[in-house]
Image (tube, rainbow, N blue to C red; front, side, top):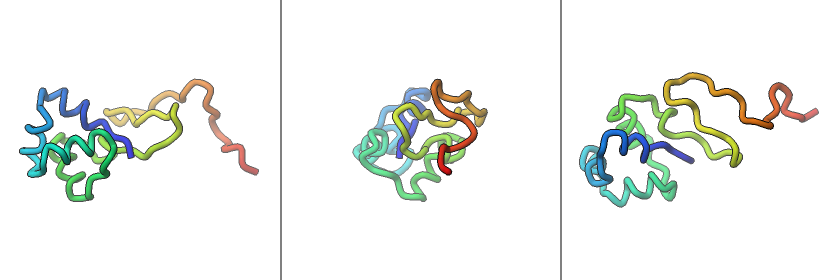
Length: 92
């Protein structure tokens, strides 16, 4: 699972320690989540979403192809990735 936690944290000028203190976890946990080495528990994901005032799915999104992009933070649809097919999946 990928995430935009580091961007959200940096936008508030918080260190990993600052965020960890607000969440009641260790700085190492924040680092592991940011770098994708650890997927947060559902309760922790909900605390993150509440803290940043955004839905969970704007913070976390599934791994995908290298050219896949996360959803736009404002919920708007993104234009298709160049070279990506639209419509049919190609399966018959």
